Length: 139
Image 1 (tube, rainbow, N blue to C red):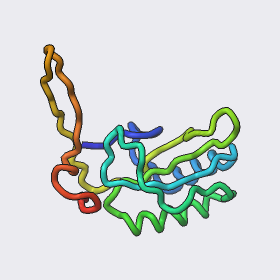
Image 2 (spheres, one colour):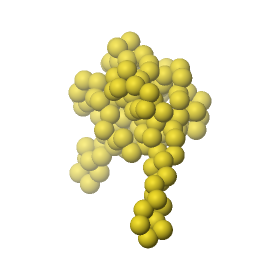
Image 3 (cartoon, helix red, strand yellow):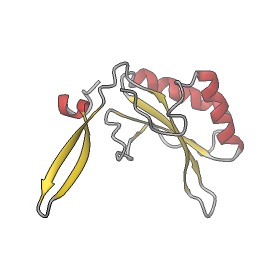
Image 4 (tube, rainbow, N blue to C red):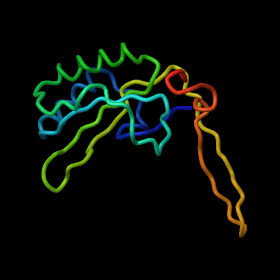
């Protein structure tokens, strides 16, 4: 199962040249770029681990790509995403986010159904990877 999160989630994986163009787009707008990784890509897991600090003062895509290369080497079997943060007054939030690395095997999710009083049925999703192994050992 292919995880679809972020801006380009329904496209094939971006090449490094395409990633550089997206970074250039972000930097041209004054956005800070950050790199995050996780082994639990649940759609509601918005708090991924930061790889270093957000790069508020980087003006060249080569610096971001160097950090991305180190992150890929450190966490080759995990999901890695690039995020762009707009710190201008009135926005101050993530304005672009997309995956730049994924594990070779993406196990997918299972649906959990819970019946509650009053004929209420609640649904939740859980990654098969979360069931299989402890955090940091899932891929």
